[in-house]
Image (tube, rainbow, N blue to C red; front, side, top):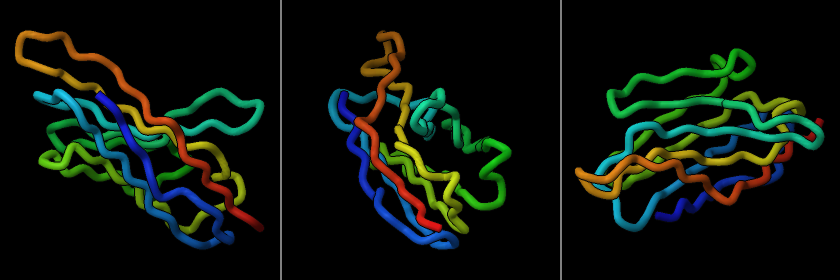
Length: 120
């Protein structure tokens, strides 16, 4: 299973970006899809997560500004980021929990990361 991210870039404060992450390979089901981010000198932190029931959860720092969504048929998760702030600058990583077959255990997979830079 591979996760391929896209959508990062440079944006001014107050602007918007949309990240996407598509999984490919042997996929039977995906339970958790999430976005994490990591800034230089800081630990990787959870930004937003969504389950296969449709429930979502957000870090307090992005609540009301970011929206996570998923299209199960495409094995894709999105992160719409509005009202971006310089402190949102980080490498954003996609995370998915994938089961390759009904009898297989679910495994964790990570994307390669995409840089988001917000200028003031």
